[in-house]
Amino acid sequence: MNQLIHNPKIEKFPSNEVMLDLVDLKKVYPTPKGDYVVLEDLNLQIKKEEFITIIGHSGCGKTTMLSMIAGLNEISGGKISVLGSSIKGPGPDRGVIFQAPSLMPWLTTMENVMLGVKKVYPHATKKQKEDICKYYLHKVGMESSFNKRASEISQGEQQRVGIARAFAIKPKVLLLDEPFGMLDSLTRGQLQDVLIDVWNKEKITAVMITHDVDEAIFLADRVVMMTSGPKAKIGDVLSIDFERPRTRKAILEHNDYYKYRKHLIDFLEH
Image (cartoon, rainbow, N blue to C red):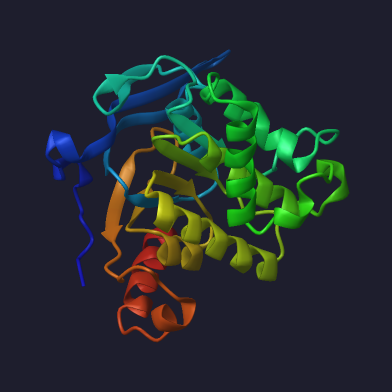
């Protein structure tokens, strides 16, 4: 089993392998009592087709970092680049799935997915756009609900549509902010399987925040651990060496599973 990498800064990959590069990232919020530094000297490289999960205590800046990658939150210092190009605000090269599904409740599942597809494929025919929407809704098990309004389906089903919508725009990087955090454990497990099944086929670089240690291990190639704020940075990185595709049963029976789990819990408790 790989050991924890105690200085993630030194882990550099060849530039042709890197999808997402965070260099000396900093986020500062001005307050009446002076500047509050959320993130400082944060360095992380994420490879093409890699699935990264990020864990850390509440308030350590995980969501701040993700929103900066998405281009939704201004960078105070350092830089973020996708395939070597610095980001300049939101873009279709980065898809986002939030904790709340954030669908338009009055639109059908098809129409919700179509919103992004129309922007990314402006020159496609109507049928081509519909086929893309149907393909991804089918992938997440929503083929019988094309014409149901978002307000008529369960929260778990809404999140399935959110996953379909994110993959349908073919982003280079998929950003997930605790997408299953509001769901019951059974639905959560089902949607983890849906997510990883679609990801295995699409091979899109994925970065996901989670508070669930087991979820972090099950989904990831590497688990990134953030130090507590203020001035949070990357504390440790743990490589997960389970082969893909994975099943829960196989992982739970693997000798390394509990070693990985102990590593992560020990980090969070110190």
